[in-house]
Image (cartoon, rainbow, N blue to C red; front, side, top):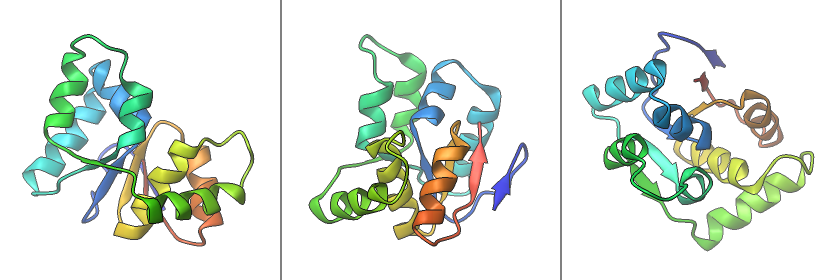
Length: 136
């Protein structure tokens, strides 16, 4: 299920690396989505691997501000195994961090905020689950 622009947020939302990068460059759509989540009492989830991919050192004020309003999800063994099994079913070009994003979204019944719709769609299809994708 696709969502663009003024998308309705589901009960939960997972941000991928692209969402963090959008916040860093002060993307208005990203900040509007985040503000709506906060207003609705939705605590966005950010898999820890996304922080690894987006963090470049220094202050990164915008990313820090976004992360202050999120739950950073550590990668535990069972979700890591599920993400690994999921990744095995798609093209090698799709990274393990994207697999952790989709695993988290599927487990929670949450949407994914991403700048990489194609990879997220492929992983969601492989998981045989419908995942709402919100583009930034």
